[in-house]
Image 1 (cartoon, rainbow, N blue to C red):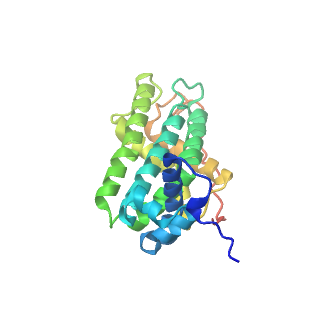
Image 2: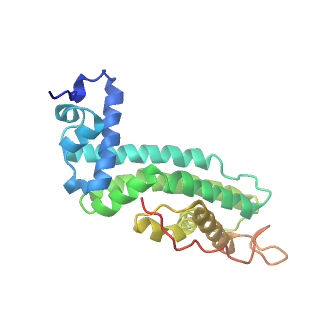
Image 3: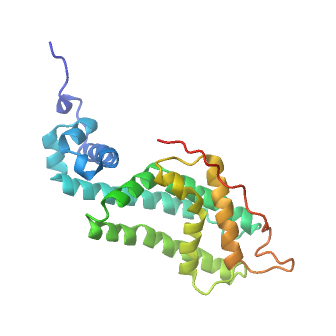
Length: 239
């Protein structure tokens, strides 16, 4: 006798809880299977709901995909702005505190679930949905750049950095501190803590050579070291 329980006969969940369960399951399926390989039946099974429930909440697959990207962007922004709240506004050791901040950004916002899923979806589907990902660029990275630029402008005003364009400095900071992690990401791996630390250190030191205020000893900023950090190892842990 078949004793399988139909998903929608399980104990009831609230409307919002059920909607978020569908979004979470859809994110997993779209990232694993791609848009073309994903289907509503598979998403419904992973969400623990019926096929009709998915349609009732989100409409068709395309609308669900758009909802997933927007949800991931909102969650990613929440993590980014929580981390931006730890920016060293009054640093005693500029390099060390910027490195620690860069590590938190990489760990909390680049290497986390939302960062991983967004990278996969952007790489695979941005040509299919240019307007959707243009909106992501404005609502995600665009907001991050502006918020980080304001913090760098304050450090420049305090005499700790020198820059003509804080927006450019913010974009280059973000690019530099995860540059050494990109190959691992491209190959589907997850950087180790040691790789994250090395990438953050190398990125900050390069940033300070460009935007740091020269000291009497010739270093770009107090506490700056002329030697690069150890390069991240070639080992890749796949996920």
